[in-house]
Image 1 (tube, rainbow, N blue to C red):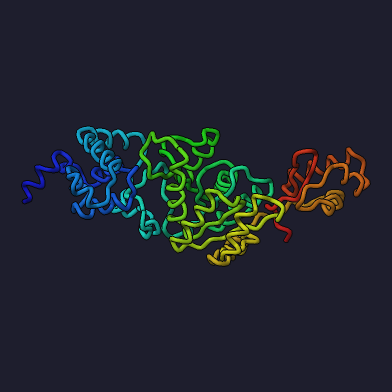
Image 2: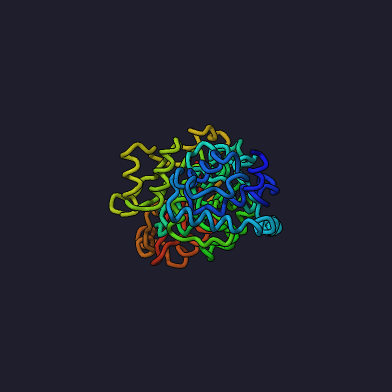
Length: 378
């Protein structure tokens, strides 16, 4: 029986177990649960080669999935050379049997059989927090993402997101200022998507990692993003949603997080904004309302550390202090500041410029200014 088995699996039996798992990624358009069942019933990753259509049908494979399987089998002779080329490119392949595979992700029912990694995977002994939200975020959402990510990262949490426009990249850039961050991509780890985030992509590889279950050279397409989202929530202890419309990928991530037993936090927003509807719905359905970074820091017992690393203010001059009291979280126009403060335009402009350099305020579109979130009032 053993001799027949060896004959059936051909050259693939000569591969190391890890290379056999790599070959299994050729089946990535088949659901991970079916692939894992195939591996289990065959007796291991090396043994899944050469299964009959009858056996595949018994395991619930559709005609399309059978076709994908047979196309993968045809790659048997090239897979070893392809695997060696992968290693030379600086991409690591971490299988579900490797110690480095994220512990939390192993608990997920539809976990991937392997992950492609550039850089590193998150460390198991530090909290992992996902921050996701709207691509077309508001300035409020951007500041929330930056402040929360910066505080959590400085306190030792590892920030995970999808490197998309908006909330994702804002949170990851802020996290890298203070610590580490990890991006889970919809496509291959060798393709920076979106291309405009190439600087962030390269920094993530140096200070964290870029991760995907998809084979290198796979382009990011919409159908792959939900699969990506289950990994974002799956490797994390908690997920934070900042700005999400009623139907958005962020809510899919929150749904995955709930199914996986992860904590879900949502940042509230304006009742007049479509970007707040998703977060408010999450809060109504039981998500934790996140009003400041301190909420989650306390939940993960990181609050004391956060206080030690909190950035100190640079002092304001007397004129700057006077101007600062007329600036709130909502943008205020220069003309209104001129009226309220009574200062000449030159004096006011100089004060505003210095306050922006010190991090107290930020200039918005249309000659408006507002307070930032990233400086403590203590």
